[in-house]
Length: 96
Image 1 (cartoon, one colour):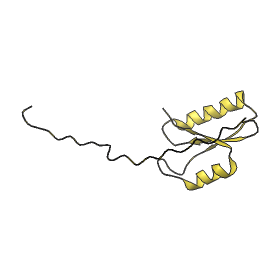
Image 2: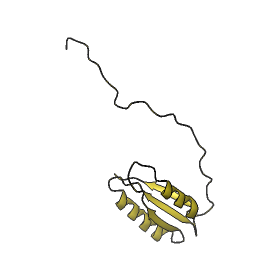
Image 3: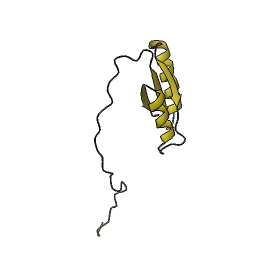
Image 4: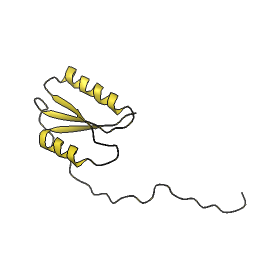
């Protein structure tokens, strides 16, 4: 190759990230509502269904509810508000 080439970085400019403290750990999940958030990735619905079944078999005192945002990759303030209002914890799930 005789000449120079120009390479463009497809990642663009990373956003500024600010660290936040983790939520305080619950002493127990017994009797608590854990939202299983299906993030609408490929196969995430299957994973959330299996996770719900795992909780039912291994931790039956934990209440679980699967919830989905209105669309993938878009913040859903209504869903977040529902989790904050009703839920005690949330697990975000992605597919394979």
